Image (cartoon, rainbow, N blue to C red; front, side, top):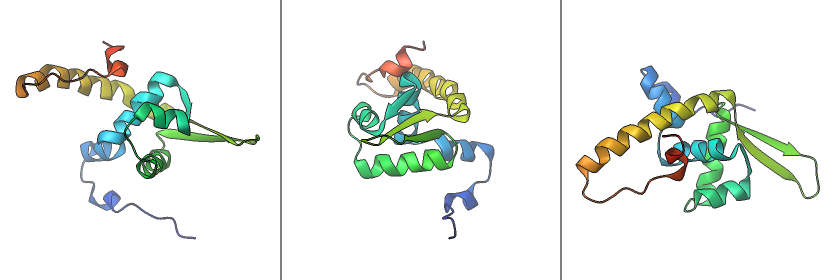
Length: 127
């Protein structure tokens, strides 16, 4: 069976675009941060930590992160079945980058917008 290849792969023209494809966007970066703070989580725990994500979006985003080698999915042969998600070494290496973006945003977001930004507890621990 032919493996589905993401259309984005063909459009990447520089390393920055590759990085933003791998960990950019609202949900991928949040999943990485949540897993970084918790080490390993079951799907229901991850969903609870993510708050307002739908099951379809969470499942699709996890699938992308697994395919890109950022997240590891481990299933255990138990009754009921148990599945846990953890960051791979590649996934852990992204965390400092996201923390740097968070710190940069904390400085400049306040200058650009009048309202106060809610501070993510995960990022706040690393300051």
